[in-house]
Length: 201
Image 1 (tube, one colour):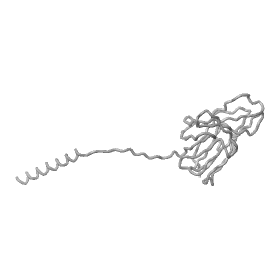
Image 2 (cartoon, one colour; image 1 turned 90 degrees about the vertical axis):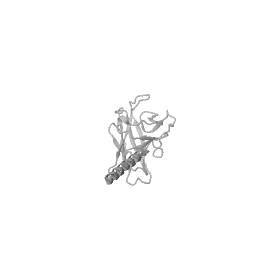
Image 3 (cartoon, rainbow, N blue to C red; image 1 turned 45 degrees about the vertical axis):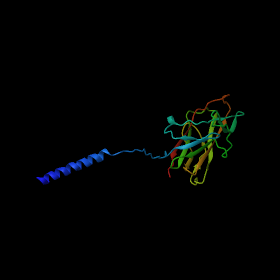
Image 4 (cartoon, helix red, strand yellow; image 1 turned 180 degrees about the vertical axis):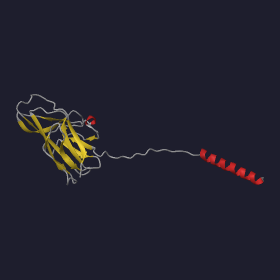
């Protein structure tokens, strides 16, 4: 009988100790993030403007940039008219492209993979103008990168390929040819889209 009583008391004491230990717990919390770069994100810089970080997943979500572009003809017809950035924002100063040393666009990948870049117009250009893209790569990591000369239309045309994320940039120039029959005044040519894609190696 004595033995049973001692066992009973021991069990009660054990439960009491456990209950007290649960009551005395305290909790702290912190939030943890992991930052994975978008594979095809990039920075688009218009001549004379600050760069814009581009992560839009489709044309509808395309990031608008501060600088618009114009081609200022002095006569008609006229060939090889250099692109010019247009001001209108505090971070954009109008400048005229002067070949690859002062290109109208610079593409710099921000992700973790080499990229291909292509351009297209959202709507068809008037019959009295053609616009072509060209340029040069710049940086120590451009061994397998390159530029393609293209006449632009409403289909994406690759203008730069295998541009590396940290050590290779694409400097893109745009030039226009204006033919007889051009409409006098200012004509909007609509939106020029840039698409980035992972380069296949």
